[in-house]
Image (tube, rainbow, N blue to C red; front, side, top):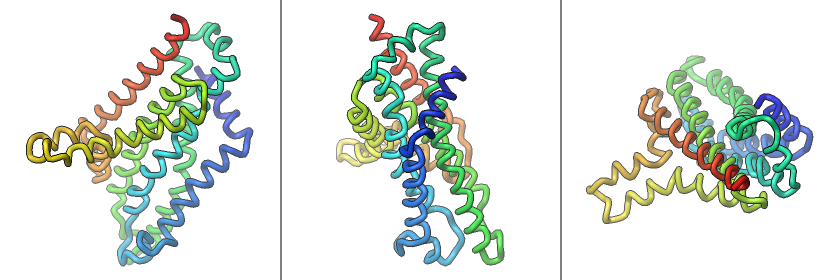
Length: 243
């Protein structure tokens, strides 16, 4: 698994695509945080990183599928997937190597946002007048959200040979799991009759809960279960080739 992990990381950074994806993510976040007047923290009147954590999931819906779309689709298109599956490693190790490599790239893209935290920390009056606990909880929520999105992206890449199809499929599934259940709960048939339960099936509900700075075991179990589900579906997609 470690060799696959290193291979995926090297492939990502051996081309300009990797740097462009990370750069676009940081530029878009920077524009929303400091330039666009409707979301700029400079116009808030108080130190907060709320725009970062409200915008990051929107960008993740497109960024993470762009990172994961080539994980298996490229292998299948080039025919190297057959060579990979004949190596003395299990399907779980193959999926794990590609999954953790993609997740590491997302974490790499998030690391520079610590500079945004430092900037807002210094802008506080007095300096440091910032809810650091809430921000830490929001970062943890982002990591769990990214873990779920990466699992969805790897699954989408495993079921098709076309990277564009993998990107579109992963984006659609991520969109549904993040916003779909929330929109679905607003239908008249559910309002006041179980709309809370429908919302709890979506990622937005649990992400908002973690963003409050409270690490609830139910939210953690939800994200781990969702990630495990798409890991399992990815394994079935690989097993399909053997069938």
